[in-house]
Length: 561
Image (tube, rainbow, N blue to C red; front, side, top):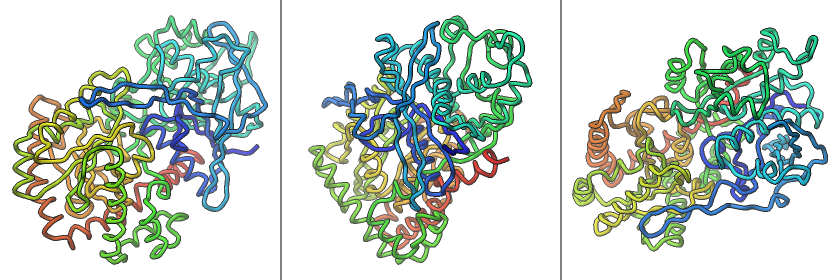
């Protein structure tokens, strides 16, 4: 087996019916590995199996979300590997196997992905469930899961013959326990348990870490008593400056302390992370998306016609400027019509394909402020009657334990009822990869309303750009880099990090002004200019904000330095 880079992620989205993903982190991981296959980069992916998936979202007429397990047939997608390994957790051995998935790139190059599975008869009933639920269970369950991913993942790779891995890339802190497996591989003196600073430095040289969020809930931390019980690692308390932070094991801090290269996922996020984790240096590699996966078929056909090498070299999309505007518009109308038909099939909302359509599909987290657009119903009615009609399509799941996110969905449902006589507002149930591709390509504009600076990057607007859908967004995350006013889309609101109570009202008013005075009049009154913005979205943002460019930066800055 040969692989130069091992890429570890708690979740990886590869196929819609493989319920191994929840949202942006997993989609990014899958897109990264797909680009590695396209570019023939020798990478191997490691993740957990998640037999019970994330969840199937059910929404009642009032927007109340309930969850059901999303079970899937593992054998339909993956090949079981014969090798077995075991790791010690809670003072007992937990046996593991792996299942293999192969990603084939545009030239036929294969990147394997291994899904670790603890559901074996040799294990206790509780241990068999450790790889069942994505982000399920309590803190103890989560710590055990992360040990299975990190420590078990390294052991799995060694059992499969991956001996000469140059770098181990941890996609978020969930994988940071792989550093313990690498420490265990270092030559030991005397009793075989002592870890030295020389060991730590050697591991640092082999590790790359990407942090994805400034939101505190995104950084797992575990009390030392639990860590000692689960892992029984004497070096943790012997070297607290390496393994502990404020008396706890913070998985992000652990990864940073044991990585030679650390990056945030946009320029702004890297800046925030340097403040959060000072004095550790944090570089920036802005996220991207896998171009082929997220481009709708009519646009793929258009790109094939005018830029035949676009799949191998995503930068060729810059030549989209030469595509005739009427052909871009025809492709868009086809994609939009298909999406409107889908919405009609799934809901009782009779959307009109000729009406300006706004899309918003994100994880239903309060900081993403999905209901900001609906905060002033009377103003929205005025805009619809004076500037021109519009309709809105929402989608997104709230985490099962996030009551604030669930309440946000209910508020959107209530607003849709209040506005039903003036504006059609639809919330699509059970947001997944298929819905994500349809909505990002099938609307006229992509709306994004995060609370700065909490949007580390975001990738939904990048997917929209590939399909000629401009963004209208708060200046946060990737949009700070991708925004050219009136060229690739529009910005609104306060770009500062002010989080005061007046912030939402200010941003909403700015959004309404931009929609009423600029965007809707342009869509209905100057379609030539609107189509030009669509084309520039492809040429400027689509050609840059992709995982091919992103992976090239990792290769130059992290993997082979």
